[in-house]
Image (cartoon, rainbow, N blue to C red):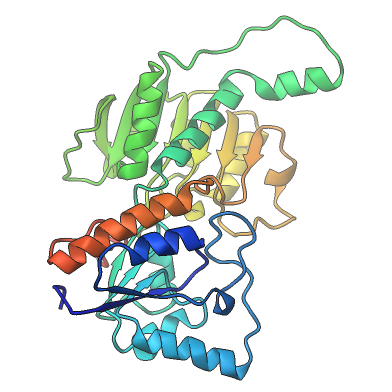
Length: 346
């Protein structure tokens, strides 16, 4: 049970800089950190928690198994055999994930039925994702694709753009990310309509109106921009289809920082190809990596981002701050932040 043990063994299960490991170790005298970087994947970029898997020989694998067997708490899921964490980690009680959306991962590896507590990284990515969403909308609202084409041809032509101020922006998903997106767009005088779960009341700064998923089409009618920031659940899978895209204003911009299956991708391609939509800024896709055959790659009115919009150079510092706060809560017997709800899927 959660409480005040004499010692608490914390496994660092994905790549993390030494400075952040030291911060975790200094959280409390009862914390003992298990960290062997040579047994972990090699990060490809800053804050890469997947990395390149190491080719461990049997002696190194035995060392990793021994660390797994000792861990009371794990910073991230086991890179080696995540599905076997309940068996390989008999002392384990809690996993702090490095991602906000872990529902698909937990289901895919059969961990939903375990007794483990999972906490997510919800909130740590809100700022970067809100910046990305703003960039994506402004890119098309201010006519950047035309500017780039004219610059390449050394062509000078006066032109008129649209204004974000006064436009109707619909934000689907009102968790930490959606709230931050709403605040950012409202700060630039957009009229922000939020869409969240039925039966909930949302007190979000800058929100002009709130509706439920069941009213999605009414919320989207005449909208100039749509930002998807919701988790992928049974309720949100395929939430945005042909009819929902058709409800948007002509020339509207779609930004997806949620998960690919939230939107009907073929319907999105059709709406972009026909010119019905002004543009799309996409960080997530139905299939990742985005296949080379996808028409989205070659479309001038699409920004393709390789599921990296949330990854910034400060991410590991933010994750460490969240984790150490949760460690102190765990030791004090207080509720943890961002506990994953198996029924809701986030």
